[in-house]
Length: 289
Ligand code: FAD
Image (cartoon, rainbow, N blue to C red; front, side, top):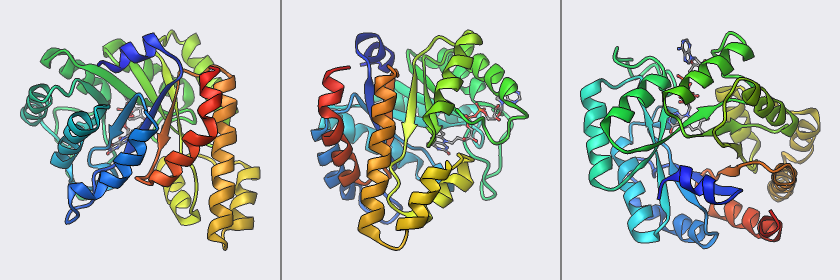
């Protein structure tokens, strides 16, 4: 089923993000995670593509097939374009269509010293435009409540986002953030700019200080003082940090749901315990949304 239809039928749309197991690890290694994630009955599961400089591309498609065929959940395949030419994207889209993988998150991809950009695609909107001609895909895009780190300013960031939506993005998934008020003003600014597609907020439960510092450096999300205090206070105690990080993420999600967001996209980091605990905490709240 196309993800845009899910947003049309129900709100909030709940989704999880996972990444393919690293090279050398068997695809089956993700079965335990997928088993637990599927018990939470998400509306879709998204699979990253070469994120963090990995070249696990075929595994993205294999994993998406597995999610669809074995777990009967709709997958969303991330696809980046900066380091691919049109022939390579043609090949990817052919495989996606052959396997009934109709939902694609069209991305530029991170700049990565080990992969040389090719010249066919410089920005995600060009991939969206290209994929539109290739088949009946449902295409989504990424957005940045705190502005993409390479954007000159917020106004230009939203101008370019509108260009992506005009090119054919039918829903947006946000970068992770820790301060909901930033997301609300971002959504407001999108509306003012005429962006009308659903925007699902991305939430990452923090259970490990090193992990979050790495992510924040990579994506530019800011850490609010009250959250920084939690990290500082509990960083030396694994269980305390886990509990505090989960409580913070749950309170963020409840506030978002109370404010009628279009969805919740959970960056699971392949940790099924985190996803299960969050689902458990919010299951009654979701029923009331
Ligand atoms: P774009 O929309 O192309 O934007 C990139 C930059 O270019 C921005 O600064 C934008 O303002 C600017 N820009 C856009 N259009 C124009 C224009 N016409 N002229 C000038 N400037 C312009 N990375 C991976 O490698 N694999 C993944 O699986 C992955 N999944 C992600 C999932 C989500 C939900 C998010 C939020 C990010 C993900 N990323 C992933 C990271 C993403 O690839 C990077 O953030 C990347 O730097 C930008 O990708 P984009 O698709 O947003 O690019």
